[in-house]
Image (cartoon, rainbow, N blue to C red):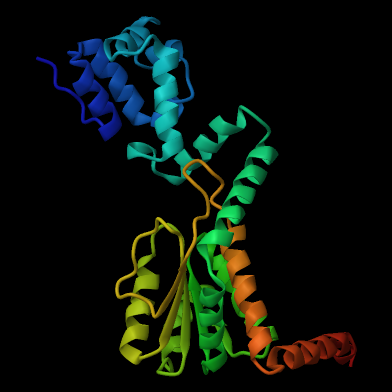
Length: 294
């Protein structure tokens, strides 16, 4: 008696709808598919059958039993689920593979440009001037600004903290001091601002800092994906914007644009503080080579 393998939702649904009964060869093929679903979505039926140690036509027969015209149609189904980011395909490598599938229809550069442009066009309607001003006011009134993001968001956190420091604000990039984070957070209190960046899912570190900021009475700003996991407890102010749909490039330009808008708006409302600090920084930087020479 054959035991059916554990199927991800989209394959299980197809199996239920087709009413197909799996043969021993089918079980072996599905096991191969599940061991490396990304590879399966890119290979032809002959290659999949070969990896399962079966006749070249075995994958075609499985596809037909599941209601597809042949393996190319079944593979297109797998690729569609890959692009939509469902089931076993919701992973970083799956997202890259999905982009490669789309790129096969055009150049990789065109694919990324189209994704970025579409995400930025959505941003205009998704984020309001009031939301940008709320972030800027919180930073203007804060004593210190602690910025934190993990993974790709750490790159943006570094840029935000650097630009705030150059604008005359006491900003700490917590992403760059992971091992000394406790020391930097000791003075965190009411009057301080914590700016969190959480793309897709917030890391445990981000959630811990959020909870600490809440206990200490600091103002919490959060910049997140539209579809990301909700932050708990909720931040004081939230801007959520899509970085692209499933299979798109998951733009860093979108959150960077929002951050740039906040820092620009900050310069418009802080009574010249940003302008003076930027001029002072420029003058100091011009003197620095001579100072080092001495």
